[in-house]
Image 1: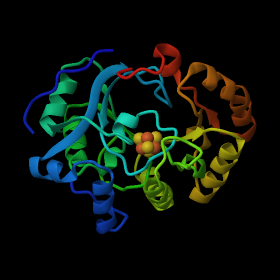
Image 2 (image 1 turned 135 degrees about the horizontal axis):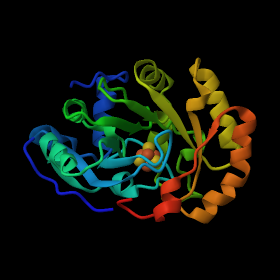
Image 3 (image 1 turned 30 degrees about the vertical axis):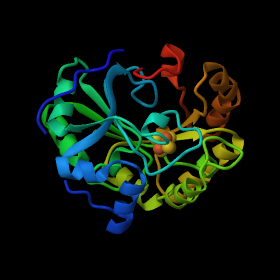
Image 4 (image 1 turned 90 degrees about the vertical axis):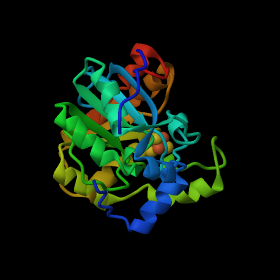
Length: 272
Ligand code: SF4
């Protein structure tokens, strides 16, 4: 899958969290918020065309726009270049739209990192919708933003996602920040009430799977055909190992098993 050319010219976030918390989240997320704000840009890790490999739209040709910076630090993060060691380029909204219109897919996936930390995200979403794209946003569901999209793909982080000294990478500061921020039921509920949604959980072991059920109970009314459990892992062999117990477990508990098809198709490679 190729990288896309990136250039052209460049809403208000309505946080459920207090504004001060949102500001500190943006700063602490190493997201170069000051630069973004001054230049009216969004920090972009990569833009590429591929196939959606996870969730209800698996197999759909899509353009992936990956923002850089995240307010969380999951120990198993499979995009550390957008979280633990964020990097990328500051692009205007128009730069990003141009990069997308240069490609053929009509589906766009805004992913991260955590897209919601970027102040210009609502502007980008509105412009992409004006261009007629189907828009999926992948978020951990910890920060509310009022923006248009066709599928809100929410991936709440379970207690087992918190980095600890037994796992690398690890930092005590991020352990505390991650644990404080990772669960925002009211934000997830608000996204579910205002958008078509899927809830996608990364599951490492059976205690994670049980935690998903109690999480879903606490959310209230949830369409279980939209609750997807994905095995943790970036190698096909470990995904298959976890799928052996997770797939039947999902069937017997009325939720959906979600393979990570892009790993099977392309391996764990950037730009796929
Ligand atoms: S929320 Fe997503 S991008 Fe952020 S650290 Fe966790 S897995 Fe990585």
